[in-house]
Picture 1 (cartoon, rainbow, N blue to C red):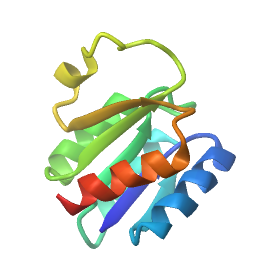
Picture 2: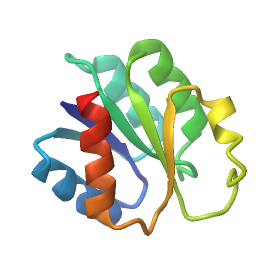
Picture 3: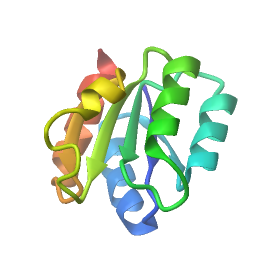
Picture 4: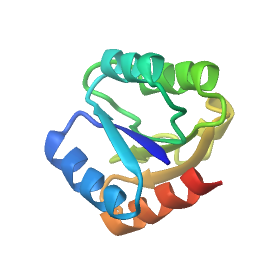
Length: 121
């Protein structure tokens, strides 16, 4: 099972990666829109889950989700954010591959469990 983490904060990305790897998933990382698109484009095996910070410092998370729906149509996207923007659920209308919307401070073991669950399906 393959997971791509797209997070601008390397410390947070490291924490998430360690927890998700404990679930038995292979994890790739990107810190910007460009890196994420390159990772999706160059992936030799399908990406099952993308953990994607909604407010990337280097680009648009929605552009990454849109590209993923084209390049890896089975991939599910877990959006992570530290704001209440999109708390009305409208994100699910904008990104049909979205499967979850969680806060950045979600315990990493919970995020890892979600990634493992969606990767297995």
